[in-house]
View 1 (cartoon, rainbow, N blue to C red):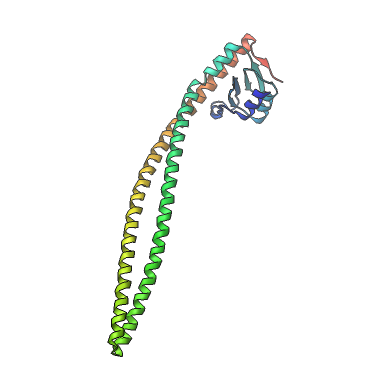
View 2 (spheres, rainbow, N blue to C red):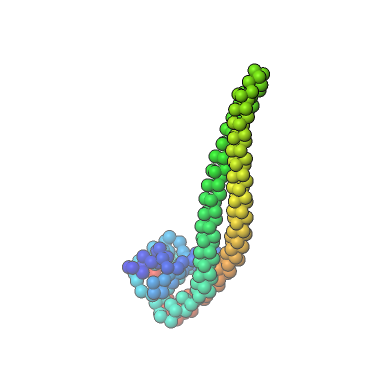
Length: 235
């Protein structure tokens, strides 16, 4: 029953792509701890009821047959050699895509932090601007009163605020440069991700073709097994 559960879950290896080759043809190949399967829910229930052991279950026209002959089971498993190879390549590409996604995420977090700092600096610039405007108004009032001492105090205060604004502007500029650098890195990663995505799409088309070819081989195997008597009906 352990392998039967593997059949249902298609734990180690599964493909339903071959169903496109012949919508009426269904199959399940159990080989060791690995499974390749394509079929309806009813077909899967039939497979589950057969128990463990290496076997091939083939369905057509609403009927199903089981094959346990070791040579035929091995032949059926070999039919998926190309799909397994392509699946391994797809897995590698997926791992690379995942790694790039993680790097992209880290860069995004850095961009977010820099954006937060930029926002805070912008708020400080706004407050400094308001303070500068208030000091200018007070200085004008002091001038009207001909209060030279007060004017000097306000002028000194304006210089301090001006220096702070200049420092804030410098910080904003540096943050902007960092954001630009991160943006270039993100764009580079994006191109790499796009390239991997195209490779995955091309590989996916090859997988579909390989799966259809495997299904055709299994259909021919069923014909031979029916003639030789190696295929036993499944209730």
